[in-house]
Image 1 (cartoon, rainbow over the protein chains, first blue to last red):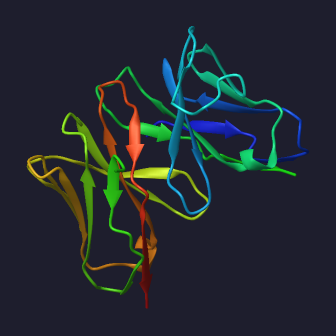
Image 2 (cartoon, chains in turn cyan, green):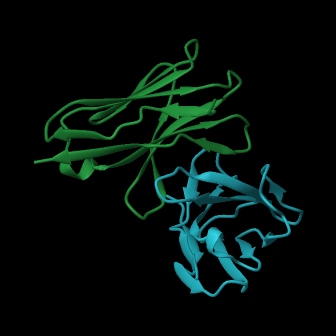
Amino acid sequence: GAVVSQHPSWVICKSGTSVKIECRSLDFQATTMFWYRQFPKQSLMLMATSNEGSKATYEQGVEKDKFLINHASLTLSTLTVTSAHPEDSSFYICSARDWATWEETQYFGPGTRLLVL
Amino acid sequence: RKEVEQDPGPFNVPEGATVAFNCTYSNSASQSFFWYRQDCRKEPKLLMSVYSSGNEDGRFTAQLNRASQYISLLIRDSKLSDSATYLCVVTRTSYGKLTFGQGTILTVHP
């Protein structure tokens, strides 16, 4: 199946710093990528839909000025957590769909664990 | 009410057992349905899509009842490697926005 990578796989930072997470589709083009967040013992919650060449669409309750999304190419979307605080500590996962096929399957990246001290 | 609800679990079963998971969804306009599995501290991986006609993949059988808005997953002859969290997933649109259930933890013991 298609491969999606994320970088970094984990990050520890001080409160107030910004953290950038990259999501790449390695062997297919993704005009749309999705960013999820998962807190311990909870399920994945969609944060935003990242659209190549246009603004991201954010889910209700997700601050767009805090979670900046850039989808500058067909294979790369970035999520920047600005001025991170301990409550932003979570497992961030991206996914992408190969629009060149008719499959609805979404391929997930391996996730990024963020710990804000 | 949550959009996708699953059995609370956890399920602890011996090897070889048959176990069934249930899931209900609230939006009748939902279009596509999936079961994913998620191992501890890993990303979700697609287990199988779910169709109204029912579908089977080896020891796994999935069923969808659109009238009742109900999805099921049956695992036969459980293996230790089946231990994971099973996520019921629904999409409402054709462009792929997934809604996840809270997941059901399965532990298969020797």
